[in-house]
Length: 126
Image (tube, rainbow, N blue to C red):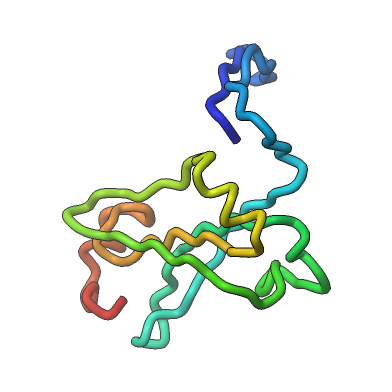
């Protein structure tokens, strides 16, 4: 979602939206984001990925395959313990509206799964 300002009640943890940055022609109901995992070539290491897509691709899907087949723009970075967290980008909307699935792969070297995962033996397998 675009940049959003929230009020959070520290006792009940209830959240109230105070402001959402306006993005022309953006309707959040048209898009979905999911957390996926790929298996590395070692056959055991799970590599986390975040995907966002237009809900028109939803089709008959499951948790393992949340969208129908189509073109994918895959971005991956993992080095020096730096994380690549998912974030909203209005620039991607044009791709999503044309049926492209945008995926950020959190390859080994980042710290998304913690320091142990980063340092575990075979980190070069992903």
